[in-house]
Length: 89
Image 1 (cartoon, helix red, strand yellow):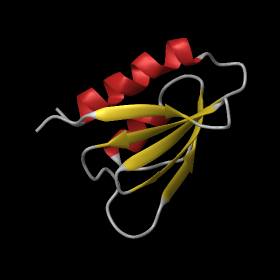
Image 2 (cartoon, one colour):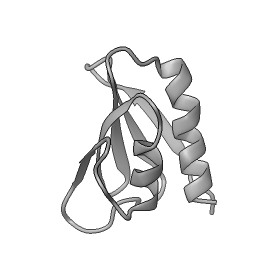
Image 3 (tube, one colour):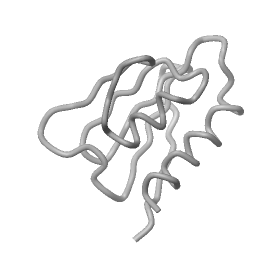
Image 4 (spheres, one colour):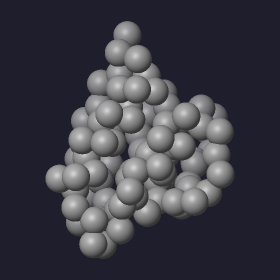
């Protein structure tokens, strides 16, 4: 089954919440990483490699992606969607 994502705006214009139809972060604890942090999680690694991403926060079936203030969502979101597609083919 391919992953389905739903991007939602948040009150913070520098963050979006992405809900999925699959568990992307296992276990009861959350994952919070900043750009430059080391991780073996394939999606987290792919998201943090996108230029303009500042940090991510994920638990179970969603991840909040935050960008740097001067980055543009128009450039970042297609890369975020591609990261999901690539990791969850």
